Image: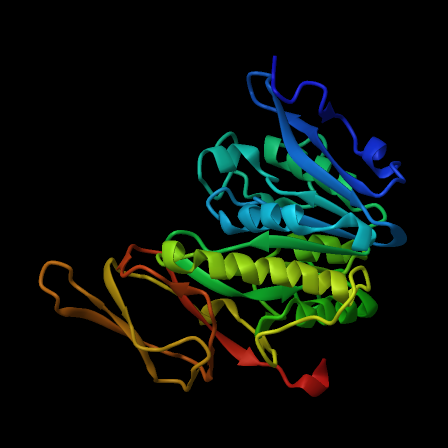
Length: 343
């Protein structure tokens, strides 16, 4: 018998009806594998000592991004429901098949969960997982944050917020404004508005929920600096709770934040293999024609190709964190600063 027998549920209505302060943990059934075995996701419900807003926290949407679930687990161990106003719903591992394979996508159907929200109840396995989670956690939500990180070869340090300029956007002006305020409260210095990627934040924003996707940490320095980035994510969650008046105190930050747009052509990816030798740093301003790095032949050490910026902008924090790269691998992104008066 499974160690979770008695803890699996088909809906979270039972958890949401609990009025006493405290924490509850269950596993929500969301789909079946091709052999018929059930797929379930962990769900934590924390009820505060006073009524108030509801924050939804998701992580583990990509199975090869480990810092989100780690940070969410740390937060769950630190939060004191007696000091909380309102409630928190947390799903630490949204995509169990991808997590088990340490993969971005679900091995059963190749689905990328972050692109498929709000899902389809009659769709593929990944679409069904998306539909079940989205339907369970979004009713009554006042804000939603999906926690992502870099992978073993990519370091990231930015947040994306729901807005009318993103792909497949149906976000109204009020939700956009509140999403940006939530992004500023999270506490990192690079906030992304216009970009080419559909994600959880856009699906939630389309449903009228202020929302973020955060991308914090990852890369080859995890053993040395992983704890630092876990701390940043936990700080960001608590900042969001303070911003929503769910915890006492004021948000803490790295410093003043800038808002940036990214066009797809401003995302540099490797078009050759070898060693990538970066010549710029995150936050550095560049102009069109600036050398941002070069590729070297690992057999000879000689330069194969030089890469220059095609635009004026700022080097953003998604950075290839390992020199060995292959075709199509992300190297970095260049952001165009948004005039604050236009926000």
